[in-house]
Image (cartoon, rainbow, N blue to C red; front, side, top):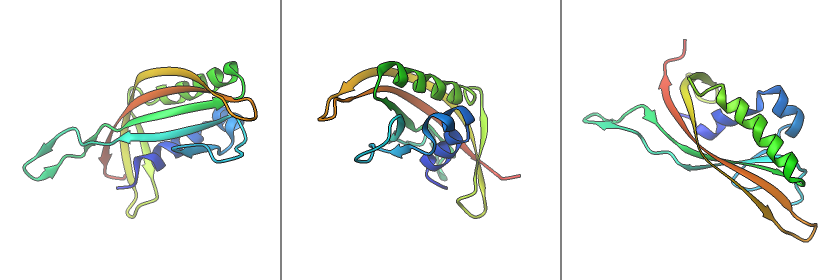
Length: 146
């Protein structure tokens, strides 16, 4: 099973509206030094199995993922977060996400559930950056590829 962050990253970047805003600037954990803004940072907080049984772990997981939409102006960070929310809302009632990074290829049946939103300002020598943080639970279950 591939890391869920790879599958979710590919899903997010496949959206034309997001690609127009950030290109491929979706980073794990923190933005790089001298990054170009706007950008998104994605952090998998945890990824516990939901249920286990006598044969071991089940195939249903509920990772908590934090998405930070960064921009130099608060309105731009809010707008970027709004486009990201719209993309993730498409999977609210279930989406089949392919994963070709493993052999044989796998698919994840995925549902999203938004948990929390925060806004803050990070000051630095160049002035600073606005961040809108959204936490999601991304329910996932591995399914056989068709």
